[in-house]
Amino acid sequence: MAKMAASMVEGGEDAFRKIFKFYKRRNPPPDFSDVIDFSKRVPGDQVVPAAVDPGGVSDVEAARVGLQPVRDWRVFGLQGFPGFMFISNPFLPGSHPSWVRQCLKIYPRKPNVCNLDMHMSPSDTQDIWDKSVHGLIGPPSGKTQPKTLLDRLRWVTLGYHYNWDTKTYSANHHTPFPADLHSLSSRIASACGFPGFNAEAGILNYYRSDSSLGIHVDESELDHSRPLLSFSFGKSAIFLLGGTRRQDPPTAMYMHSGDVMVMSGQSRLLYHAVPRIVAAPQGSPASDGRGPASPLQQDGSAVEPLSEQDRDACSGYTHSSRVNVTVRQVLGPGQSFPETPSSHQRTDAEQTEGRHDRPAEGERGKRSRGRSSSCDSVDTAET
Ligand code: OGA
Ligand code: MN
Image 1 (spheres, helix red, strand yellow):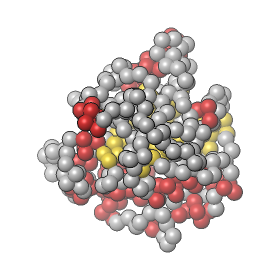
Image 2 (cartoon, rainbow, N blue to C red):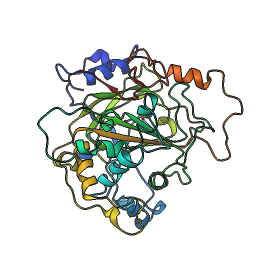
Image 3 (cartoon, helix red, strand yellow):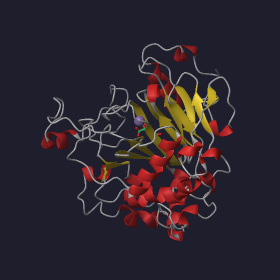
Image 4 (cartoon, rainbow, N blue to C red):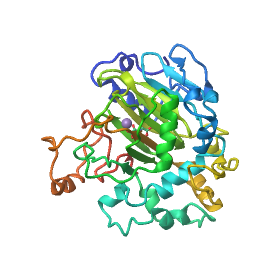
């Protein structure tokens, strides 16, 4: 345990918040020597090898969604966190940009919902990518450019659209879940021992260098026996995984581009947060920009081919930003939403009002997520 004050790690009142602030601090920057780096692959006291089922997914099925054969995945668990699995970048070389393109160009499209819809008309948020791509390619103009819609994109919801105000999903706010992301999620879940996982809701978070995501638990899904999957691309992040109480001090780990996290079993309902975005490690595709051609260009691929221009634009974005996708199964087999809304659900009119009034970091309780007053899930320091 390096230079973190002993009082911080002993627990006590909101130990999570103290450690969150420790890693978020800019001046002086924190000591990162306690942060677990799964990419360095050294199982030790805390990091333990974890088993996946190579028979659960064929090599062809894996390749169609841009994944390496399951037997080649490097999968870890964490001592004291049963049900938590960390798969260190199981993607095939060159397949990240195809998934990044889906996250930037395809998933923000209607009928999916994004933070910009909260204060703009549907026609204005119609094609975020086409209206923004000029800012990611071509020679720098030398002048400071106005922020594009993509610069201002903070979250997108898929499938059952998460309602940030009531913290619920509902039967009547649902659009088709993207088939490619459904396939990717099924493959990962099968290999991790969850065959039949049904991706029903997704939240994408878009992080700039100064963004963070507040301390929260994801418990709005009605079936907690299903895992929560998390995929990250672009810049790296410090991820904090805590306990069932805010007094439990969290464990810090890096999430690099391509890393996949599975929160299941006893780790499904733990507090977690992203206090800081950090540079991608030297030599990684996210830091270098270009990589090999995408294996997802082949026949049978779940994802459509990637143009040169899209590839360049995606690499421009991931050079300075991070995208995280969490995929959730909301309902268990045969389960449906309760007939009557629970008492804390409000009318549509009230929800619209409430959307612009977010708790500030530190004020929120269990289940709320760090958002600024402009309804951004990810907090961005306005400097
Ligand atoms: C979430 C979440 C973590 C991350 O969206 O619920 O916890 O790594 N995301 O961005
Ligand atoms: Mn979460």
